[in-house]
Image (tube, rainbow, N blue to C red; front, side, top):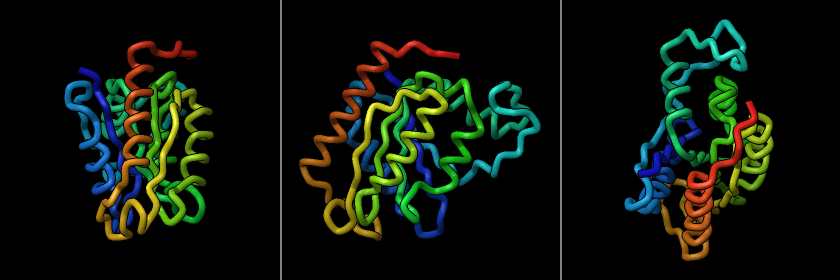
Length: 181
């Protein structure tokens, strides 16, 4: 069984990220994926003494986060778009680690008034820098696919896009990219 971690990247009060992540989890076929939701609200701002590239993690929360990423076969990041980009907690979470991201299959699911295209494009760049294997993204649009309160009304087109991302992740797990560390 493939291990899929779905990361909720928003930590704001009133956030709808957990609802979107639960919907994403429900779309992952149980015959292929063992799914776990990961909430970044418990990860503090980076507080390690050493650089992530060195892998000398001292703090329990860093070790737990590193284990979550390393032990997953694939990751989906669920992100809103705030001020034309992604929220700070996901950048912080990416920056905590280095080697764990190398060749890790990642897909992005954005949500917001414009489907979070800017957020997912920016995240693709950042994840590419740490050598994650970003397979693609999709975006849920407020009032079309999801309400600002988190009511999901996702149509067939977006469901098909997510199914394609899940298939791409499964393919990468079955035939992984070569790690570069």
